Length: 360
Image 1: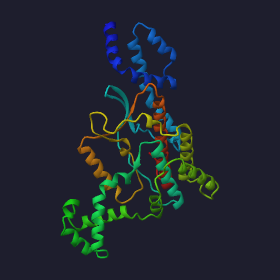
Image 2: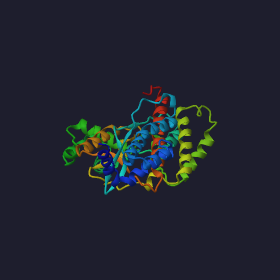
Image 3: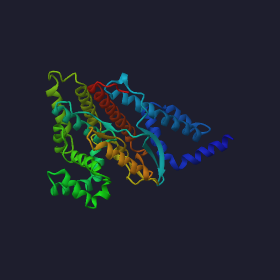
């Protein structure tokens, strides 16, 4: 039986040796696997079985390491929630290559309440969340998901506004006598008015800080982070600000982003990324499972529609990385993911503290 078992392990390992080597390289770098154990595996009587066990030990160590890194970067590591990883870690293969895949286990919708903050602080928090999304964590603006969904709605809104800028009754008459009603499910005037309010809030948000943030360009290059560091320096002694939960988070996140920039001038997963249409299943980018919103009136309705549509097509949310034995970026990519998730958990903690709500 031992010989059959060894041949079975060999049949699995042989076509996947480059990917297995990449994972073992990560285990060696992090100390989960000893170099002597690898040498002993190659020199032992059942090398394939021994290598497979070391490979499995490395994969088993990754989730606890990711959670520990996330804990270190949360705002309050001691009150870290009993959370399950936002994304599970799987293996997949196609085109003859082994890939490490982060697959969402659950949707994680963030809705931060920044309206009560000083406008400058609220803008700084939103900009820093953008940097976390760009450089570390798989997340996106809820507005990014709304963009394509609201194109037709915005066209209809603008057309109706031009026809009846000041008279809601006239707007409803125009809407009810046109083909728009079928496309937007306006069953009655109340449904139309609710739609009008949502689209209007998307088109022209009420909070001043939100308008300021949206008017600024997306962060590109190192300049936004340098500005964030200068801003922290200016604000460090502002009365009442240094102890505010969101300022504490801002300081932690900015410094973490700075450390990441020094280590990884480019996001470490960039060298391992694969095309979006990889594999046999339909998949959405992992960041779409973790949208960042700010409690705008349109968010709940839009996100419900978006996720219902994704579910209808049987899609999941995932991010895949090539297991390349010649590239050490696999461990760095996982580390960046963990740091980013810790910062997002810290943002949830700051939001709860600012609102005086328990963080569960």
